[in-house]
Image (cartoon, rainbow, N blue to C red; front, side, top):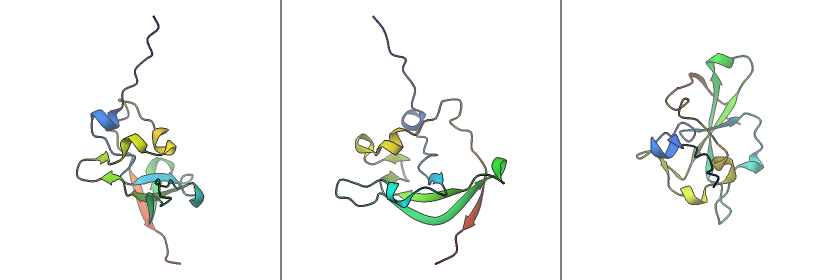
Length: 111
């Protein structure tokens, strides 16, 4: 009998919410790829903030979003079972959980 290797999910077990508070994607992330709910409404709202990881100051820019399904009080997704594929694809390991990247925050200019 083959047993599948169980991969721990610190985001559930440890209430880790690093990937949701705020949602961070590459600055060039296409707006049409922002996930939507069953009614077609976008579940991520752009914050207008750009994050630059201190370790990659010359190469990486991250756009940030507030997720409407994120419960800041509990650190959990309010619709975990129906979360979009991009959220399901987000992965971290127990070794990485708790390690916080330091970011420089930049506000985007109003258009």
